[in-house]
Length: 178
Image 1 (cartoon, rainbow, N blue to C red):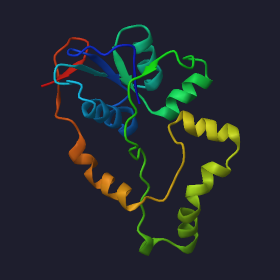
Image 2 (image 1 turned 30 degrees about the vertical axis):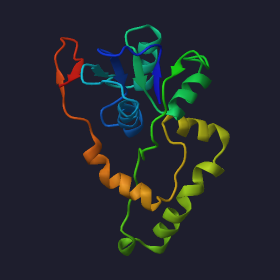
Image 3 (image 1 turned 60 degrees about the vertical axis):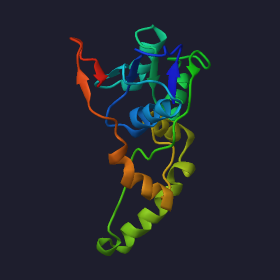
């Protein structure tokens, strides 16, 4: 879910949490592309170490960046923590939901106990106490669910969806797509 104040038609400065994050990079980046924003001339930056999402939000709030991409769960957690006020940032678009964490196992090698755990995992977050759900959401974990056929196909395609390489062309480490 990219956060913006204003996105110029070219030469935008955009920050993402991590180039390894589906929710914090790939989904918002692809969403901006789908909306027709010219990202070829954009300066793309990644926050580095923790606290990643806080740096994205503060970078946009203080004008260092025109836009930033973070997950809805993290934005809501930052609002609950008082780091950003609800409505303080405009939402340009919401990206497609990409799986952030994939847990896979080989059922042939699992004991009955492990199979039972895997079967029960999707409902764990829903039954957890509120404080634990909030802590999990702060980590970007909203729920676990059994993947649908479309999810499995998306997971298989994720590698092909990564944007072309970014080239470091600024002394501070910011990168541009070329």
